[in-house]
Image (tube, rainbow, N blue to C red; front, top):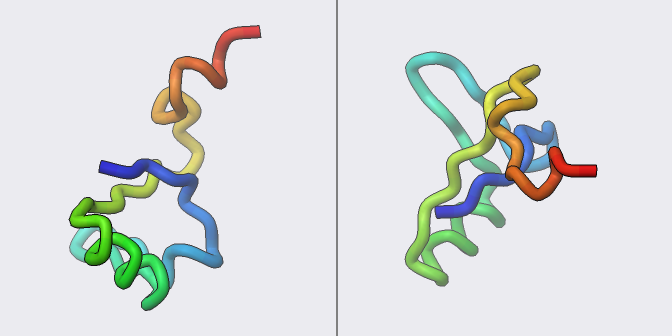
Length: 54
């Protein structure tokens, strides 16, 4: 499972009912047999723990 940021370049549409990724991300996920679950907008707790430590 990959958890990238919810970037406009990766996510075409993100609503409560559906999530549409761009075609390149879909192809990559199919090739590596994984899923892509972008983080929620404006939720810093979704970031990886390593990014929080300073």
